[in-house]
Structures are given as structure tokens and as C-alpha cells.
Length: 480
Image (cartoon, rainbow, N blue to C red; front, side, top):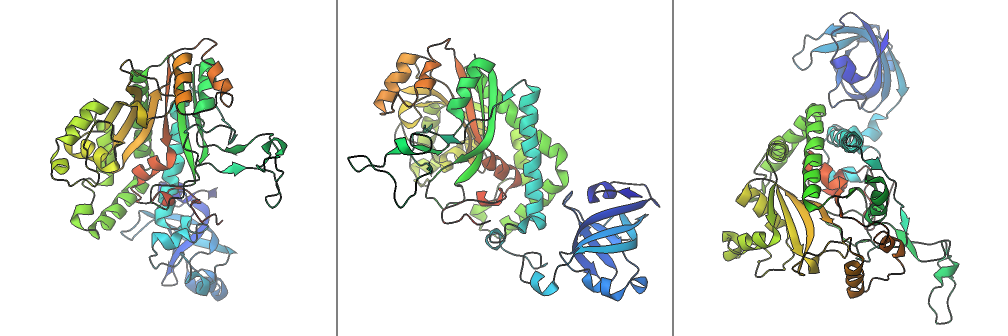
């Protein structure tokens, strides 16, 4: 007898072979047909039970959500819904699910809203939608590591607790060991962080980039893939307080090399999931199509989910300077007719998602990499161009979502970097170690950041970022 996963049995042609499988009941029809799923695939395995020769008490316990252990013979299915089925010879109930309680949960066949499912994050993965999303997330995660390892990158675990603010936004979660009711104070009444656990003020990290840079300048090319945190009080469909970031850093690499790397990386991971998640992606594509049909025409996706993925995979990313993009946007019909919510009036404007999508979906009809942004709207560590007004930054723009990757050539010149930090009032003492890398064999180097949930959202077609992470952390919500 072969013990196997549902996915393996559905692909098998070993007819008359004895199999055993464990999983959860998705449905039980006519006291005869059990649909079982174990999470290995979106597809259920039909198990046909001889109810006349099965104990009545056992039959009562075969309910939606129950965990069962089935043994039986693989047969060609006579039904049109599946190729194979198991003719059950024995069945054990491993874990009961009370039918009355199931009716009140997401395990019920009744369709629930995504908002309702978030209230039961411990059970929502049992639904088709979230099972598919989380399997795709898992494969994407593997593809990330696979790409970098195949290309001789070194995986670096950067600190989660940090004393620096890489983004300079200040929206960080504080880490302390103090009794919050009675923290020690200085003579001037301020909290004395020298007496805290780390001897200084510390926070949860917003990015591993600065630390990754130091390792790139010794190991050559590295990447981080870990949790990051933002204390931004935002309840939009695009923000999480806890999320995962992919951040490669490469020594002896300029902005052109950085753009090449980002495009190659993205195409690799998309191809990987298209090749390895076909059933889940087809289901998610059908789901998005149904969801779109319920929306007003103006809000519907112009491309199906699979078309969107292939659009990125099959097109070269168009490289456009920020200055050229501003000219295109200023002269576009939506801008002239004031159809944009944020009308572009002059160079220096911070582009919004509507502008980014116009460039991708309407003007160039391909993914776009914008580069050489105004220095005033970008971070201190980005390399200043010779014009003194722009920096060697780049953003990658995708259909339906806008910006998905942000990166830059880093400022390797110590004097220029110090001047920028002084201008932005960033304390040199806090980042002495970062500045040191510009003193000991500095070189041209570059990197980018990709929010993993943003990538999963793009690949799965889910409208809200809270639905692509197992346990979303948002303002006023840290359940589970």
C-alpha cells in the first residue's frame, strides 16, 4: 500500500494499486462521495465509500472539515469531474468537525467575503482561494532563493532590531525593555535610553539594505529576504505593518547592471510560478475574472491574470528617464483634460500609481523602468548625478499595480554622502559603520528592494495586500 498526497494520487495511473491518504473533507454527497483535500493541490480527490457496509456512526462523522484517513484502490473515475478516484476499503476519522459549528465558520460551503475570512486567519487557508494564494507564495519564495543561489549570491540575515532608520521616514516600532509605566529619565526629563537593554534607542527594521551593503563590499554580491516593519498608520489595501523584503546588493555594479539584474530576476520568478503553479494560477485567474464582472467597466482589469504575467515575461522592460516620463505625462490626454487625480504640472513631481500605470498600460504597453529621479524625492544613499539635481535611482513599473521595485546605484563617494546626510540632518555618529565602507576600498555598487507581498499580490491578482500574507498585521490588528 502506498501512502501518498492527493496531488500525487490525482497524477497517478497505477490503477488497482492500494493507496492510503489523509486529509480534510471538503464535501460528502449522497452518503457515498467524499471530496478530500490535504493542501498539496487545489484539486480534491474523490473517494467512493460503500455506505451499505460502513458503520452508521462513522458515516455521521464524515462532515465538512473533518480530518480522515482513507485506504482504498485507485480506479478510473466514471464521473466527468475527475480522472481517478479511490474505492474506499477502510476509513478512520482522525479529527471531528461539528456540523453545527462548521456552519458558522468559513469551512461552510457558503461563500464568505475576504474581509470575513481575515477574521478567521487560522482557518481561511482551507478555502480554495487562500490555499492557492499560499501555495503560490511558497513557490515564489523558493524561486527567489533559487535565482540568487544559482547566480552565486550569498544569503545574508540582516538584523531585525536596529539603531538606524534606513529610509529616514521615522515610522518605526520602538524596541525597549523598560517598564513603560516608569522608564528611567535624564535630568532634563527625557527617557534615558542608555539604561535600556541595548544601551541606546532601538527599533524594528524598515530595511536590511544598509547592512546588506556592508556585506556586498566584502562578499561581492548578497541578498536579504526577511521581515521588515513600518509603523505607518495606514489602512489602505497596499500597506502592512509587517511584511517581507527582498534586497540584493552588488559590488562593482552600476545602475545599468542593477536594471539588468532586476529584470532578469523578476522574469525568472514569474516563469517559475507559471511552470509550477498552473492549477492554482488558472483558478486565481478565473476568480479574478468573476470578480471583475461584478465591477463597473472602468474598474475592470484590461488583461486577464495570466495575460498580465505573460505580458511582463514576454516584453523587454522599457527604460525611460524620469525627465522623459514627465514630458510624456504632461502632454498626455488624461493630464490635459485633468482626468488624473494628481495633475502633473512641473518637473519634480512625485509620480502616483495612476501616472505609473498610464506609462505602462497606455503609452509604452510594456513594463517600464524609470531612472534618474530628482534628488529631492529620493533617499540620501542614492548616487548624485553630475547635474547635481538627479540621482541614479530606478523604479520598475508593472501593469495594474504601478511601482513594484525600487533601487539605485549607491553613493560611494564619502564626501558627497556626508554632505547629503548633513543636508537631511542624519547623524553621522549613528551611521559611522556605513560611512566606514566608503573609506576602505570603496567602489561603485548598486541594489534594489522588492516588497515580497507586492509581488505575491501581482502574481495572484488579489486586490488587498492583507490577503497574500498568512497573518496580516495592520493598525489595530495583531490577532492570531
